[in-house]
Image 1 (cartoon, rainbow, N blue to C red):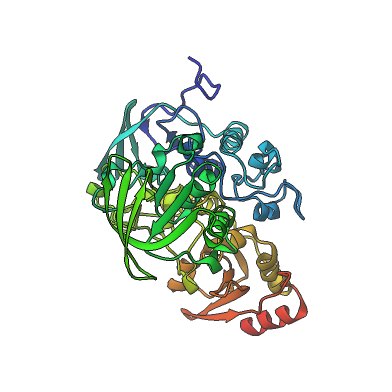
Image 2 (tube, helix red, strand yellow; image 1 turned 135 degrees about the vertical axis):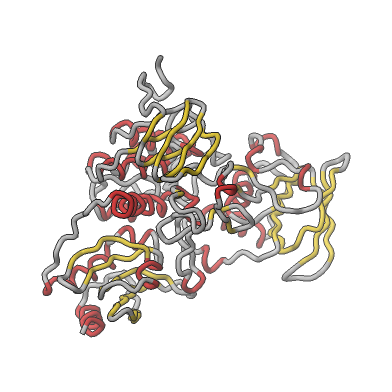
Length: 493
């Protein structure tokens, strides 16, 4: 029988597999692709009928926050182009790169939801990522040598399980009366809010996306959360296009308001909603009447029974607590891919977190996760190319200047070279490098400080101790000049 993805095949029947990946969104597709290229046998199961995951229905108003630049200083088929394309998945083969950009009509630098979905479907088809669609994961059992995943098609036994199910279950904060407020996921078409006062609970991505989409329709929009928006950070963020238009409207009195207030209760009234709140940055009681209220309070990971197997969580019980290699800190053998990998916070230097909540970041996490599984669970010996001593400094500075993984995951991922024999260890989590007491090595990363200045940072580990060397910023991010070479040579001396 033909599937909705155009295939008649249903691969991966129930049985024994070294690894089982759950989910066919971008995290699951990227993980499966990378495992396949490493020769690790695995099964992929998904309750969906086609690839794409959350992009089959979200964002609610059909336009993403993350950008892709169709024309850039590097060809689309090259690895450095990934720096300019935050939405496509990674591939070793040039013909499988930048597939989301291929779908874009260039009316905006941010793709539409259908363009994003088509791009990931094209990746699955062309790169040969096979999935058993229409197979829902329902239960998990821990066994002596791994896990059994019970699905609607039968049981899958594996040594390691990777859950790429996203952060997709609607979640509401603990506010009295919020149960009567529709969630972001239940929004109607924008025209349904014409001429109305809309109260949005939340001032993060989904809240400002709602405000941006409703501005042409709603009479008045009020966004509310306790903390102020950090405009200095947003100015360099990919989400700025969604945030700043509503914020500018709020500043100039155009009918949008961004309130810093703690909501005490929400009451359903005959005319709509009444919200009682207390100001935070500007103290005082607030009572607001609105025609419509929407809870833009976010989502949670669909854990099912994983908590019962010992998976502990963070972020109000919404995200799994993970090691730097995205394994549950409390349930060994259970891994996560996709935007749940934000549960590995990293060092958060200067308060800057990872980009693991977006495709631009977690696609690199998936590549490292596949490598970690191959080496730690299945004894794979992956190549570590040698680097000539006279080329080491040039190699490190080239990575700081053009390395897409370092630029897309600033202060979170690093390029590592061992100093015994000079071998390229590849991209690794910076936290793992800093915290481990491994052999002597050097790591380079790209970091952004609290003033939004971007600099290369070199970490040198000798005798188990790590020294940090922060290089100067450059207005054009060109870090291969003589001054930079001298600083790195001094760090390595």
